[in-house]
Each structure stands twice: as C-alpha cells, then as structure tokens.
Image (cartoon, rainbow, N blue to C red; front, side, top):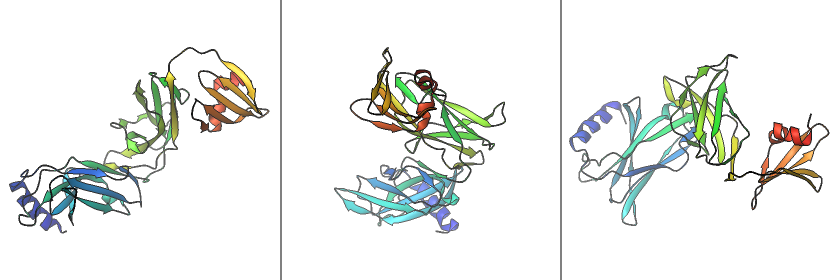
Amino acid sequence: MSMSKILIRFIQFFLFLEIYRKPFLVALQPPLVNLGEKVTLECRSEIVFDTFILTSHKNGTIKDSLELTAEHHHGGSQANFSIGPVTPDDAGTYRCYGTFNHSPYEWSESSDPIDIKITGLYKKPSLSALMEPVVMSGENMTLTCFSDLQFDMFHLSMEGVPKDHGLPSVKSHNGTFQDSFHLGSVVQAGNYRCYGSFRNSSHLWSTPSDPLYILVTGKKTSYIPHIFYHSESLCLTLGFTICCTVHPKCCLSCLLSPEPSSYFFNSSMCTSPLFKHFLRCG
C-alpha cells in the first residue's frame, strides 16, 4: 500500500478510533527472528470482524499496513499475517485492528503491540556465568555478555524470548565491551543467549551467542560430597549426581542425573574447579 493511502486510512481511522474492543495479536514463533526466516502474526477477536489490518511502526512512525479477510470460527474471527523471509526492513513494532465491510473506516481499538527483532546482523557476542551454570532454587545468578564489537546495548533471551530491557555496554579493562545481567533469586532453567545492538537500530540485533544452559536444582540444602565409581565413570554426589568419563588429564564427558531425569552436559562442566579438586584434573 502506498504511503499516501496509508496516511488517508489513518486520518479516517483516528476519526473512528475505539468503536470496537481491541483484538489480540500474538506471534506464532518467538519474536526474535533470524535474518531470512519467517514469522506469523495472528490477529484474533471474539468479535466477528470482516477484515483485519496489521500495521508496522518504526521509531514511532507508521511504515506500512497489510489487510486480510478474517476467518470466522467458534463465534470469533482471526487472520494470520505471514512476514518474510525477513529483512532488516521488517523489524519494528506491530499492531492490528478489526473492521467491517459495511464501515471500513471504523476501526477497532489497537491491539497490544508486538516488537519483532531481526537477529543475525552482526558478529555474535559471548555469554558466560560468573559461577557454574547450576544454581539452587532461590539462589542468585549473574550472566555476563561481552564482545570485541562496540555495541551500545546487550540483550538477554531465554528459550528464544527476550527478557526485560537491554543493558548499556561498558568498556572493560581488557578492551572488550560487556555488561552483566543479574537474574536475582527467581531463575528459570533453560537455554540463555545474549545479543548486541546499536542505538540507532534497536530492533536489529546481532547473531545470538552460543547457548548457555542454566540448571536449577531443588531446595538449597547442605550436602556432604560422595565420590564413587559407576561402570567406567567416576561420579560425584552433591545433592545431585555427576558422572564423568575420566581422561588421564581431565574429564571428557559428564552425565548429570538429578532424579528422575538425566541431562548431558558439555566438557566445560568437567573442567570446573570443583571437579579439578575432587578428580585431581590437570
């Protein structure tokens, strides 16, 4: 749709704003979309609208709008807007509205906004935990995102969903740029990643860091370490059990087993100071 038509529609729209209750806008995939991938935004309402209109905004300015005929079912209506393969131009804030064919200039109230961030634009930063990535329930956890690129902001996601607001990057004494995310005492288990962005393009993010899996164990309790052999592995019990296949210099692989499930960890778990102490790793 041309910009002149968009402006006309929005002038007419503001004259009839909020005649109908707002629809709901949801992203059917996580709102962090890698460059070249697709995302679907679903606009739905308990009102049987004839048409849904999706608008995109960038820096508070209307960029574009799309219209789809509504599908009717279960006494309501919906429309799925497919966006992509995405380019940097598709990043921004999206809202949707419902309307009827007999009164096309009478739009509903705006849905709540959804921010779509496009990732994969810049070199990935790195993410690390100040302590081991295993935390007791109720304990604090701090994750540090750092890069040799001078990003203005760092962002954190958990399982593909952005967490809170970004943090400004700070130049460290070794010349890299970093900041730390304090997760507090309510830490969710899962894969965490971080991203970098620049101030003049806040919806365009870097390639995500490699994932860092945070495991949250049960209630905080004092445990006495216990070491034993199982099959060809050396195991350490400390409220949970970790078994490692031992190499002459250190551990090669670990299996963490907090009953009743089991999780495989990479070799970095085996090179922690805790295991070097108990296993005499070099």
